[in-house]
Length: 328
Image 1 (tube, rainbow, N blue to C red):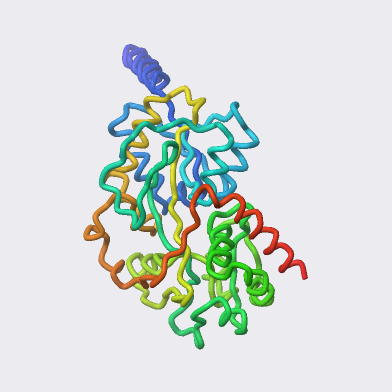
Image 2: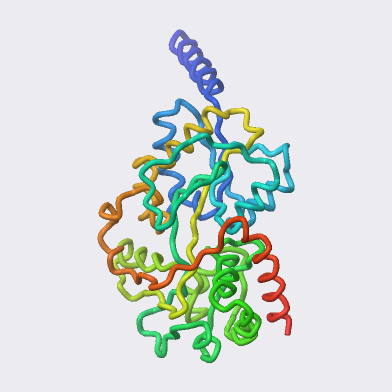
């Protein structure tokens, strides 16, 4: 009986201690919190230093995060949103839901300068069409892809940041000719999925010859699976860059803890997890520290990127062009 009472007492004490731990809620995309994504390792590393309970909440794909925030407004339970990109930051800022982070980032290894009061980068990469190395007649441009009978799977730009990135890529590379490019690509598209995971899964199941993903995606197959049979097609017009970011909600009831997480996000404990779980380039890690295999990836000759403040107008026009082309 004494042991039972003591055990019960310890349980109460432990429960009280746990209840007192502050909770930090981070909205992110589903693949980030998957068993094979960065979430589990990052959660363990941050909780080891914060005396808190870090809770990741998967909210679909990247672009779906902004839609959820708009729906929830000031009532959102999120303290941090992680997984928007520079195509969405201007629209996110316009909601008034984000607070200035007050952090001067040091040691960034992005290929572009960074100056943003609300958002901080955590990784980056280039969009590309991934395929098996035995694919014949690999296209080297959007025009060549449109003229081919190669099948592709892409993501919906209304819910997916890669899908939106493809729209911006075509628009940045082809401008007034974007509509013709999409009209040519329409019969190459097998399906449009809500997010990246669904599209990549269909590709791996053999449902399409190529999938919209990243130049870094073949590193997963090479390193994790020891399969050198995947690569990314290099396009002559260049490749669009994605920079993924996180921001703190102005209504967070844990502002100091949220800032601590953003600072942690730029530390080696976070950044070293990214290459072999999110399979992207870290935003604040010496390239020399990248795993073996990353040096084999294609390096785009031309990097394309639309300025954050110009993205909303270009995005809206590109979306209308895409919808009109695929409706024909």
